[in-house]
Length: 271
Image 1 (spheres, rainbow, N blue to C red):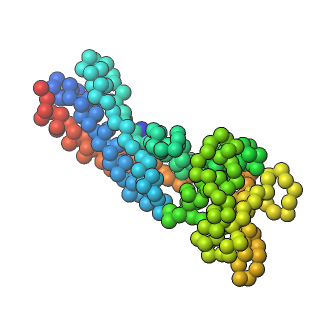
Image 2: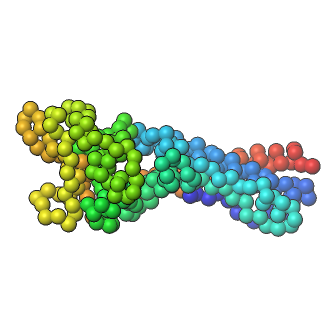
Image 3: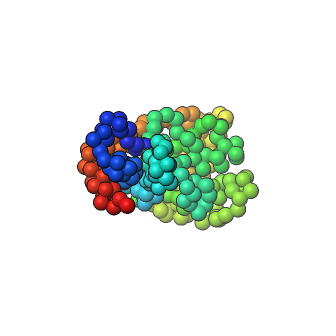
């Protein structure tokens, strides 16, 4: 979240103002902070969201403006010192049909440096005993990607069903026939129909293979295996989107123009 407020020495700036002009300063401030938040939001969409690789509409629409409320103006009219602020933030409301997964939960890591939070599929792997708590499931070469560079959602649901993990959590949905799923997976990846059999190497299992979900391959060059998800002990993100810097640039650039415009409007509409 990047908050926008206007702090200045009002007594010094307004000592030459008329009473009417002084009364309109809170309203002008109100208009200014909201306009600066809007400008920051637009600038962020252009300068930062464009950094993402093939962002989905979900990612493109992850930000919103939390406007200053008109209720703070009543406090100013009563002689108080209102805290007139607006901010630009990641959406934290319910936005999906499948559960309590918001843009903030999914995208917040892009704004900060540190350890990645767990995703939904990792909860299934942990509850089934495949993966240790605190580990992460990283997509590997055998995971089919969608046009946005993410693991195909239909594949994830069908893989969980194939591994019978929906039953593990008491949730029954999209149950698939294992042979049909294997054939579809093989066809999509242009490998033999005898391929597409999935198996798990657990984190606490002794094996030459790295812990994770693997699929068997059978091509014209012979048989083999390919990792779909690998279980790892740590996964960290570096800050990718810089909201604070974007907002600061917009405020420095637009403040004088937006405040003068807002103040003129406040005087013209004063009652």
